[in-house]
Image (cartoon, rainbow, N blue to C red; front, side, top):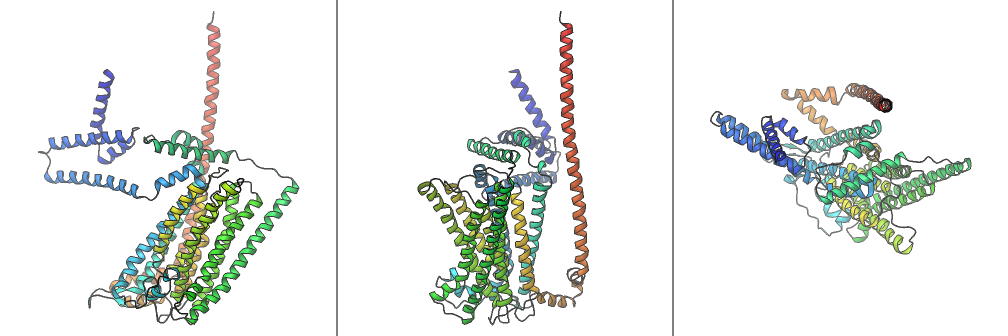
Amino acid sequence: KIWIFHGFYAEENLVGNLASMSTSERIKAIQKMPETMKKKREIRNKVLKEITKKSRHHSTQLSCCTQCLQGTVVSFRRFGDSLSGYFYVLQFWNKTLKIIGAKFGTSVLSYFIFLKWLLTFNIFSFLINFGFITVPQFVVAEPNNLSFTGLELFTGAGYFQQTVLYYGFYTNATISKIENGPSYNMQLAYIFTVGIYFVVCFLILLFSMAKSFCRNFINPQTYSGNASKLLCAWDFNITNEKAVKLKQKNLSTQIKEDLTEVNREVLNFSVTERVVRIVIHLVSWVASLGTAVAACAGVYFLSINNLKLFVKEHKNDLESQAAMLVLPVVASLLNTFVPFFYSWLGHLERFQTPGHHVYVTITRNIVLKISIVGILCYYWLNIVAASESQCWETLVGQDIYRLVLVDFLFCLLGSFFGEFLRRIIGTTVCMSLGLPEFDIGRNVLDLIYAQTLTWIGILFSPLLPGIQFISFSIIFYVKKVSLTMNCQPPRKVWRTAQMTTSFMFLLFFPSFLGVLSVIGVTVWRLKPSKECGPFRGLSSMYAAVSEWIKILEGYTASKWVVWIYHNLIASELFFFILSVLVLIISYLYWQIIEGRRTMTKLLRKQIVNEGKDKMFLLAKLRTLQRVNQNLSAP
């Protein structure tokens, strides 16, 4: 009973102390308590009741404004807590990602995190394009006189050609619903919306890549240590039995990966074995590069024939529609089956670690896919743009639409044939094969290839990111089901903390920087079509900005915009100085990180030495105690 009363009075004192704190201090104090969430909620409710009692007791002394202010603060705080809880619930696939990470490890989990990350790029692009480009176009859109047959869903031509899906449908006029009222410049909206999106993507990619690089390469011990995982990684707020088992499995997988990294054996080969391995590597690289060159040559000649179909203006029959799909089907076939050949070459090479196998496969796949995209960009910018077509931008948009759609279909077929049938064969026909493993390199490069096409197509098809968002969402669920039903966890457990950083780097270079080059050439150097699109009649798309600046020069209130354009945006000296400053800041930041890393190493050594000193002193103390015991013994 004494202990019960003591605990009661201790809790009463705790509630009283918390009630006397400010709101921010009280929240931090409750968060730091080593209690379950249920207990924390009980304490918080008691504190709020205590505060309410005190406020009622002093209500006669407080003014009306003070009471309203306190009520408003409490209401906003409760609203913020509930809003943060809702946002946590609305985060996509948190539970799914935890299950995948617990069962298949961080290597497979990195693919799904990367896929989820790409979804944010596409939904953001779709929202701003739809809001600032498509919605204003609906105001002045003309009715579509073409009939819808259903084949347009696969070809992107026909009915869709006269819709907001493509560049050629958008007007070049200034939109105004009220005479002498506010107007909307479609040319500026189009180029600024696309430009701002790419600037935001550039900053997000650069910041995320730098943060991940610092976390996984510069100072990885700070974020991942075996001792911290064993002693500090458990969340004592977890009370659900399923959540406890999932957390245990997740921690077990992470510890296995770390131990595999620590206990990795370095294999020693004889001179003959080394020569054989080098020859196998050279032959594999020659075969992979030769395959990529042959694939690019085939895509180039097919693209030339594809342009002839558009110039001849085929009728809207089944044969003509099927002919339009030859190029995307062949490109998708190459992107689907050649990576299987690369994976087979990787198995022949017998790398020492699974990580080496994955990185080599990714390198070969990126060479293949970026080469194919490069050939297609050359075809679009140098051949299609110079053709006799009335609207070459729409033709490019249709090509990219078909490539994205067919690539999505082949991705689904790849999950069926590459994983489902492989499981059937490995469990019924050839038992020695067993269940397949999830091919991380091939699947990640499929995502980068699809996202690269989407980025290129934004200028020619503003709503393409919305289509890619739907396809990526479907791919996520299909891959999740295929992974859990058809695949087994990696036979060799390995730690892949740097894998996500590598994915970001490949997405940034060569994918994103290559897309910026293509967009830059299109905006600054190519002449837009004369009969379609918002930039018709101009020497280049960027000429719309130059003409807008000339108009602003006549307004005194807009002089600051003109000054920024001439002295910052259009100045080579400004970008040179900015580049020098960025390099200097990067160098200083690197030196600071190096200094911190050196200090961290010294502190770690100091901790080890202090531990040894304590062990030495304890040993001396035990020796003295034994001597004293022996002397005091009769």
